[in-house]
Amino acid sequence: MRRLLTPRALILLSATVAATVALLFVWRRPRPADMPEPVVDDTPAPWPPEPVLGRPTEEDFARMRGEYVPPKPRRPLPRWAVALMVLAVVSGLGQLLVYAVFDGPRFPAVPGYECEHPGCGPEPEGNFTWNDSGLLYGPGY
Image 1 (cartoon, rainbow, N blue to C red):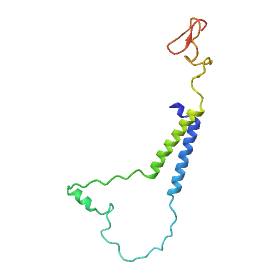
Image 2 (cartoon, helix red, strand yellow; image 1 turned 180 degrees about the horizontal axis):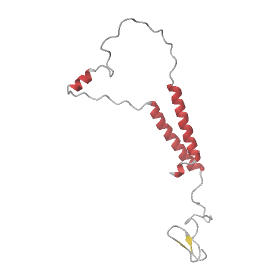
Image 3 (tube, rainbow, N blue to C red; image 1 turned 45 degrees about the vertical axis):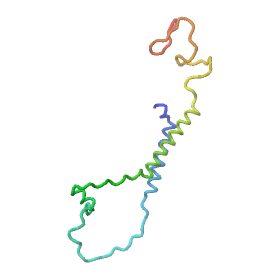
Image 4 (cartoon, helix red, strand yellow; image 1 turned 135 degrees about the horizontal axis):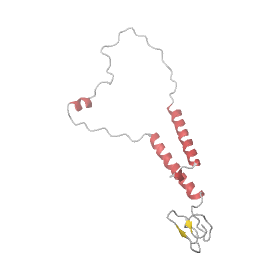
């Protein structure tokens, strides 16, 4: 997991999130509308006023009577949620492509390559052994 959180990946992720948030604010910004002149009406307001939660529908009355009301079908995900999921998948696949193509191998594949990783080079000659923590020890160490 730590390998996926390189500075380059964090910069790309933060730039992508910032651009997405900026686009959402631009798209959702209310447009100025022509406001009509207010109509002055001297008639009193109706009493009782409209209920705060609205008037009950026939489905509400049926549910209150204990009748079965089939549930409404669920709406699909909104476009912005689908766009965010697609963006996450594309950025993840792009990051995996960068790691697979442009990053060097973790362990060398060339025979006889000198390396400092335990177990990747030829076995040492002499009375050397590996301890439990993966370090080489023996005469002179």
